[in-house]
Structures are given as C-alpha cells and as structure tokens.
Image (cartoon, rainbow over the protein chains, first blue to last red):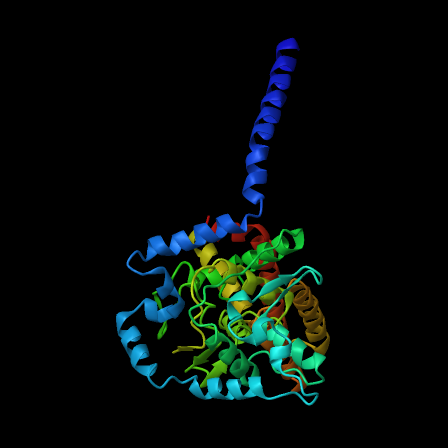
Length: 287
Length: 105
C-alpha cells in the first residue's frame, strides 16, 4: 500500500506543480493587449508583403496587383465617387431645419476628424462609429436618420473622409475594461468562422490577400477600413463600412447582422485600431 | 450453383426489392413535425448570431412546398433545414474557442 500511496501522492503533486507553473502563462496569453495585437498584426502584413510601403496597404487590392493598380490610377483622374463627394459636401454645409449644421455636432467642425472614428464612449460604454455619430447628430437636431449602408450616409461620410485624407488612423482604447472587451469582441468576430462557407473575415483578408476569389483580388485586412466609404463597381454605387460587413457576411452564406449592431461596431473598432498609423485614403473606389 | 453460394444472391435480391419499394408518402403531420424541429434549431442559431442564409431559404422552400400540398418535398426540405441549422449551431459552439487558432500573434 505504501509505495502505491507514495506514487499517487507524487502524481498529484506533479500535476499540481504543472498547473501552477502553467497558469501564469495561460493568464498572460488571454490578457487583452491591444498594442501588442496591433504590432503583431502590422508585422504580419509587412513581412508577408516586404516590398510594400506601410501606407500602400490602404489601397486594398490595388496594392496587391500591378495591373489593377495602373487601372485604378487612371480611374482616379475621374473617380467614380466624385458625385457622392460633391453631394456630401453640399449636404454637410446645408443647415438642418433648426438652423444648426453637422459642424455643430463634431470636434473641429467635423473637418479632418475621420481618423478618430470609431471611438469608445466611456459614458455609454460602447463603440461609436462615424455613421452612428452622424445619425445621432441628425436625430438630436430633429432630422430623420439616414440608412446606414449607402446613399446619403455614404455621401456625407465620403466628404468627411476626404477632409481627413492623409491623416493617420488614431484610434484610442481608453483604460476601461469595457473598451478592452469591445476590442476583444471585435477581434473574436474578425477571426470567427461563420456561414455555410465556413469563412471568417481572416480567411480572405489575412490568409489570402492578393489571391483571387473568382474575379476579385482580395484586399489585405491591414488598412482595409482606411478607404471607407467606397464606390464599388459591383454595387454600381457607394457603400459604407456597414454595407461592406453585410455583403461579406452574405457572401459566406451567413445571415448578416443589423448595421451598427454591437458586433459590427466592435469589429470596426478592432480593425481600425490595428491600422493605427496608416493614412485615411477614403473615399475609395473598388472593383 | 450450390446452396451456399446462392444465399448472398438471394439476400441481395431481397435488399434490392426493399430499396426499390417506394417510401411511404409523407403526411401533413410528418411535415409539421419536421418543420417544428427545423424551426426550433433555426431559432437557436439566430440566438447564437450564427444563422446561415441557406437555413432560411430551405425553411422557406419547405413552407412553399407544403402550401402547394407536396408534403414529400416539404418534409425533405424541412429535414434539410434542420440539418443546416444544427451545423450552424455546431459551428457557433466550436468557434467559441477555435477562432484563436487563426489569430495573428
């Protein structure tokens, strides 16, 4: 009995020692560290595409294919988003029925601020995107909200992005556990497989940027939101980040979530934060 | 042919005749039971925020077939929708941890 007892006690002690030794590493691996995540994320793409300058990633598929890039550069002489940009500029300057304008709702009169969105609102405990802020501004001034996916919203945010071109994404994550949770939720959404095709966002935009999926060349996830909103030839029109998320979900045969749902806001927060330092290039044009 | 070598052949004939026998036609009650099971699984997938578009369209096809009185097709579609919904629930459950394998670290 005694040797058996000794073996049993020895085994228990060994298991406990192993658990104690392993537990700090488990905690460290699960700790939310957005700065480390962003560094790893950017390094992954810089190493995968060593010939590209960091700021070139914001040009999406055009940074991945020389022929496509040349077509886009020619197209930029008469960009397809120009009508939306003009309309957005006019809408931005037109007062609401109460006489106020969008400039009254935003810092710096709404000019050159795109790079700060989305931000985490510590009072509300949620991520606030530019589209959400635009509609809240409208509603606060007695106006009906716009559709979150296209038309007026895309035009207005196209103008706001245009006034911010070249400014590096500067997304902040405040020292608030809810902000860290939003970042982590966004990250989880980004990497989670969904839909009958069993694809995550990362399946296309991390594992396969530069590869073709049917006729399209996949854009890298790094800098993918810097060009929003976009004129997409496939849509024959403009679309917001919400529209892009909805169509990505549909393409994987997943039922899309509601535009500006918590999940979409959080994934926008994550994707924008990991692209910090890369310039705003919106509005963009995509095939 | 000996008696022993003939037995597998006879068995194959019996199996073939069973396979060739038409299945019993599905009734409205069969359809309703299959649809209820599919709908329950579908609602669970929605609650998990992991619904598939194909579950929705197959459920809709089942309903359409039932409305036209084709309970064979309606029951088969409802069963397919249930299988799709259950696959999406499995995906949602397994991805709770599996997503980490794809993460850039």
